Length: 125
Image 1 (tube, rainbow, N blue to C red):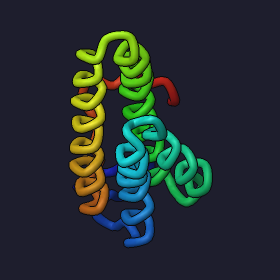
Image 2: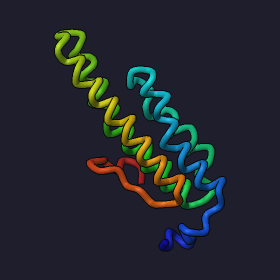
Image 3: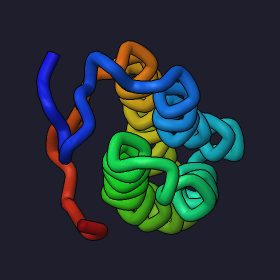
Image 4: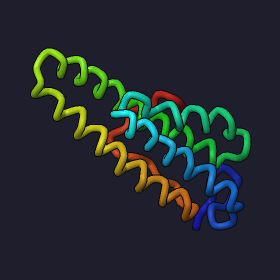
């Protein structure tokens, strides 16, 4: 399948795949909280498990970067939504997009694949 930082992606341990998947899927907790805590789950899991291996570290950073990229505009649009109710539709769409993409990335991680979210600002490298 390929090599990632000295670790063959096809020979990953199941626990590495599960932790990488959790980095992405934990963002769904924030989606349930109406988008206000989307980066919290990936941040906590990444901080706790990044030493487990480069695969987990990569997916943790990728999930966190993606959630931060969409979390900031979501919060700003929510604030605008309090001024004008029309703006509440936009954060809802962003939160739904972030949730769907987290599921896609989580399923790729569970398969042992490297996945990079599109249109993401890489804040954490």
